[in-house]
Length: 267
Image (cartoon, rainbow, N blue to C red; front, side, top):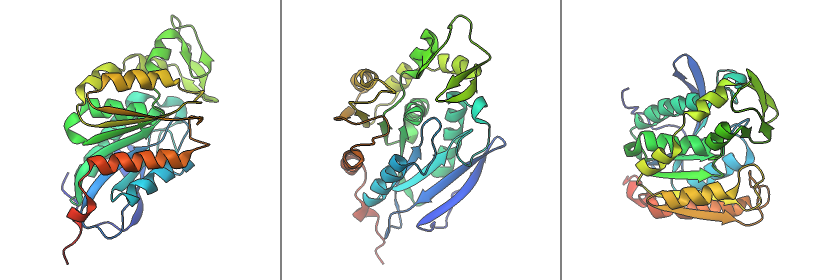
């Protein structure tokens, strides 16, 4: 893929193709910069790019001099594919396509990846798969329980017989193929964690009833360079203290990225 030479508008919404599946993207640029880092931002299961917490983190990145590239993945938002047929492996392939697109943009000085819930798990898996592509990872309430749950027979609030996976099951209030479980069992998040040596921020609410905090505590101890920020009294989607989440992201990204002043136009 050839580098894109045109500096994008401050906000641009468009699609790219991943093996016949259209992926809906939205690029938000920080004002006044000709070159800057870029963060790919991923939603969670049943989510989309305009959710309150996703949009707030995107704005926080822009405030810190980092472009954000929000992506809606297979079966979600305005992207192609049916929700019932999506799984994390398909999402991971989508993210590889989004990453290749981001790498083709010649204004990008460094690439980061950020994801919420299932998107956080996918971001961690992507960083482990291609660790040289990303300068840092931000995992928001990462759903690191998915692999364990698929093997034990409990995903979110859905229970099933792990020895006899049903053709379909209900997940997050919607019907999904049993292939979601089969794909989840193939994920190797521990290898992904060990493979990524760059800085990592994990943000998790202490009142999260969807993904237990213990999974983020364990992951933070396995990464080479990880910070765990616990948001006291907050939920899975940060209904109570979203400002603290954004502040943590901004502080982290400022500590790891090239200062925006180095990238400003001299003219």
